[in-house]
Length: 160
Image (cartoon, rainbow, N blue to C red; front, side, top):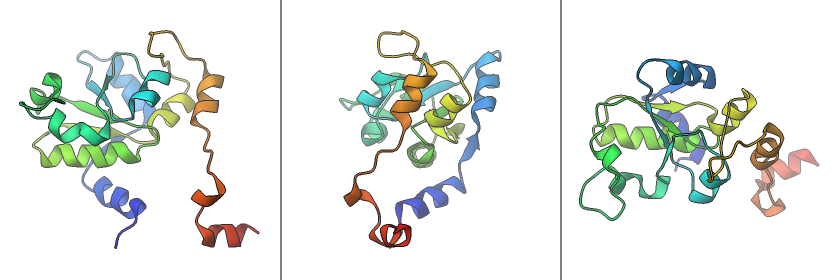
């Protein structure tokens, strides 16, 4: 049995990952990539990179094909386009990018560190209404809030 972390590490072996400063350069360049945010709609609505397309990870595969309720034409026709996949921390995005490779996408990249890293690098984000999101609001949003039952019991024992 593999853990989530192992699945992410395995996917990262075959997926190109870039850092926020690399994405900043790409966006300033001549032909910017398609930004694909695979977070859930509530996460996306709270804050995202302006111009990013939101397709939650749970519906990604049918969104990449015609004839599904989730079909996203920009993805269906973008198999050769440079696509940067974004999530909160870079884990879901690397898994999504790997799935897209399996679907025939040839130029898909994952944003390592995700929106958390984008925020740490102090890059602009907007909310669902297109209004700028300040860094302090984003810092609070991205803070990890594990409930006690979500923490690995072995780790709890070590921390006592």
